[in-house]
Image: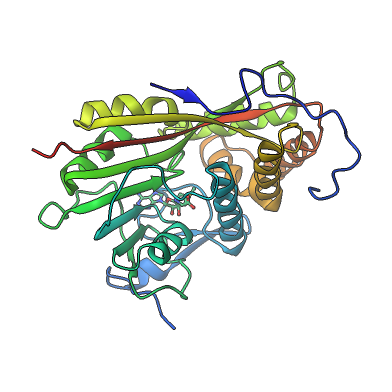
Length: 327
Ligand SMILES: C[S@@+](CC[C@H](N)C(=O)[O-])C[C@H]1O[C@@H](n2cnc3c(N)ncnc32)[C@H](O)[C@@H]1O
């Protein structure tokens, strides 16, 4: 069922290096009680982390991270040709975005579907405050037992939960129980480990960076390559009419294809916005006992490799949706 939608079997490299200068009022409402443990933060190695369910997510939630997430959102929009989702939903009334981050997807979705009630749920209360009236944000742990079965959703969406969730199979089963018969669930996620068709990323610092960092996430028990496993988890949960789209996300501006070049430029911009550091710090210091200085040194090497257009690295990314049977 998987289909790769890139320029073809090969990802073609752009060999013209020079002319590429283009790349180089409503307050949100929180349904969880805003106790100090929800609003409190943990500060570590110069970055800020969530405090509610302290330690269960290893990426920061500070302004730097939020700017990175908004860039990643632009990258995903470019990747999907401005589409927020691919599931064939019609007039959804009740929608939830799991692990909503800055809430940017939920806000865009609510703007496009003014009749829908949209909930964005996250461990961190860091969402934007300027939102359309049909969005609300909820501070909650999506790995805890849900209470939505009596008031299910038409559409459940989750994007980029790699390195956040340990048991995707359980999460998909929760989704199945909490979506209406005939309703849709869509997950968009990575195969976190990068690859290259010509092997040019082998032996580089950027490959070592991902090996080390994902090794730490795996040691901590997180799923780092959910993308290729999503189809099976959807089947196991009971979904039907499952669709799988496999896409390539290049790192950097090396592809010849203008669309992929733009996607790659966003990927690079997001990672250079302190993304290499933020992604690695807690995982490597908490789970592999690296020092902050060791992490920053590898992050800088990875960033430099990322600028090397002879390294033709990309990630596989999966958009998978399925329907709960009508009966
Ligand atoms: C990589 S970010 C992706 C954000 C957003 N989905 C997007 O695509 O822009 C992962 C988000 O999941 C949230 N998260 C991680 N574990 C969670 C949990 N157990 N419950 C709720 N949210 C969680 C994090 O706080 C973070 O905002």
